Image 1: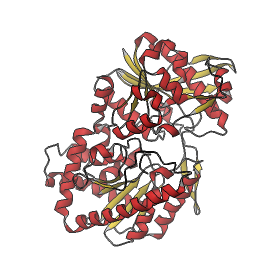
Image 2 (image 1 turned 120 degrees about the vertical axis):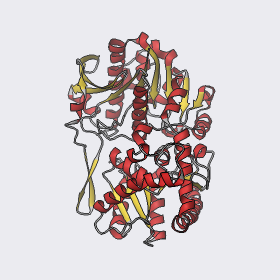
Image 3 (image 1 turned 30 degrees about the vertical axis):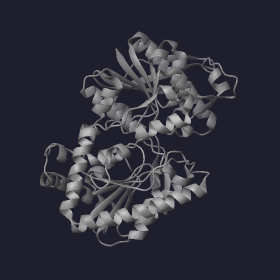
Image 4 (image 1 turned 135 degrees about the horizontal axis):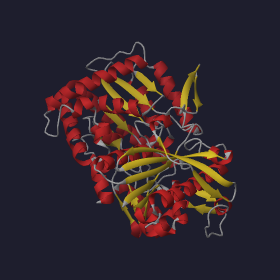
Length: 508
């Protein structure tokens, strides 16, 4: 019996198509399942033009599709599938597999006809809204046929929907209704993807009189369980989806240690490491990061006593990148701190695009700021492992869990975090990291409720700045005390944040 996971994205080290937090988490689960000899099959689209790369042109960062020509070379082709379609007669899908037996990832590459192929050409990037709806339908039909013909419906132990995007598969495979679970990775009101009912009905039989079909409701109705990704997330989803609260629970995210613990650290220290042993193992990683940052910015002043503060993640409003911008301006270049900023925005996210340009301006105007727009998995591993402090700043009640503080912590890097997501379960203020700001029990619409956002931001930022100044002082004047916090972060995260723990909770 096999676990089947349907996901719109996955991040594998060997196949470097960009993916966000969901895709990285799914990659971590895949690697851990393979290591533990668990039968685990991931079905996901192959995006021939990837996500987005940004190229510096004069004063601007210009978005371009990813170059993915070589990605398929690391995959094993499987026989082509001909999927029946009312719209096109047929559409053709070439599956490509990445195998770590008994686990494998199957990339479903739609190659013909052009409208079907174009709909799944790029990750979350569409030329028009209807194309997004077509993409969901095309993936559902391809995935359902793959399950029926090449896995066998009777061989599926459980079908996990990573977000609601793949829920139409269950509409096509009614036999799996009792074996389906809905894994929610975002906050309920904003994860409610709706599709035009007429587009769905043209290919898949659904019963709805409405003009649009809610995939959130469909996923919730068809699933035996709704699994959120932190305790805080569970409480919020239950509040905003009361009809399904009775079947809602949580499994806090984890990270695959074999991927995220830097080899310099994993090869030299165990959980019983002393303060000095961890500091010694970390020093080589710090040197590697400092070298990378100096290459990224000529003339950067950076030595052994400099505190490298990292803010690396997708650039979008709810992550509050403007907090680190304010911090850079308020702290100034005091010779103690260097800020390592990294991340990219969705090409159609106007806020994110604007914030990327502001990060670039910080890079140019401040001697102690390095901005890396070409952020990817390899850079994430180095920045998260080699920095001295991670900033984790999401607007409260918007981060479902987050894992960057876990990836940093398993390398002995503590985090200054807002009170949100899984950080509330793992970070103890002043013990293995630090917390700042308010904890909200409801979701503020950050795009419309400007007064409430301003009030929360003003209070949260004041607390962030105060805490940061205290942390910086400890780092500079009491290095032994700071290293003790690092050791406690290392011990806590290694003990509680392994994805092995999450997999055991998911699958026993």
